[in-house]
Length: 111
Image (cartoon, rainbow, N blue to C red):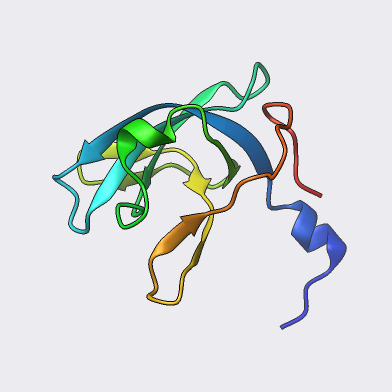
């Protein structure tokens, strides 16, 4: 399926920094609750991410990530996920976070 550049621009992918991370044992699949700061324009948003194979909550604090910030919020159990943090599967199918390889401004838009 081919999309236009205008279609691509509808997906708002921004850089943020994880400020808080907690285990989410109540989730159906193992997950971590994340709070991500996207800078003054967007602010801090929450996300639930199934990233427990490669990450511990305490190791995520300060890490920059990429996330879709213009999806509607989604209820994940008792937790409201406001953004979709992006990742790719490793060879075993476990999620590896997409991160900038250099520090970038919070809220920077991917293009």
